[in-house]
Length: 184
View 1: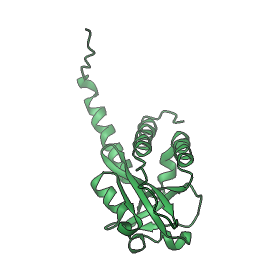
View 2: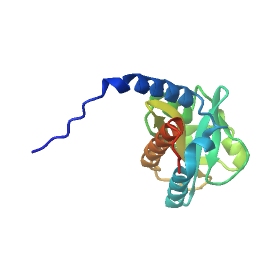
View 3: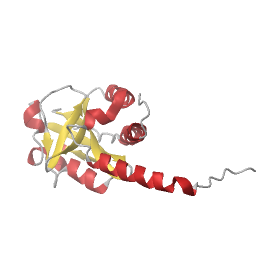
View 4: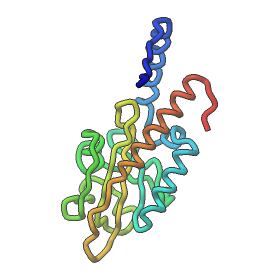
């Protein structure tokens, strides 16, 4: 059986270290305001596909904004900027732990840590969230939100696959832009 062995070129170590430093700086700049710039067309198509997959839910991509999280993209297209506390609540917990989580309305208590219910005019019946990890850092949180149903909503699936794909697409876009390559 043949095996592929990659031997690093010592001459490229300095360039690799410089690239790593540049990417770290770029990741630190990813905020809710800049999030759409980092997405690109492939990531937006991925989000549109994931939105269609759960028609009764709103898909929300939360980015950092000030001391908390702010909606950077929403499948509802609502321009109102919902916010979530940076220290408590489902979005903050997922961002800090880098693990997906799901909660129903009773456990979620969304009104205590986000203004999403007030802005949408309906209560949240369930929410699932997954971290969007870019080069080992949580750059955003992707959540699937179910609103105001009278009957209990079955536990929604966390959008982990979509969040993971978004992380890889953002990484690709960052590397391409850093190297001066055309990103599409």
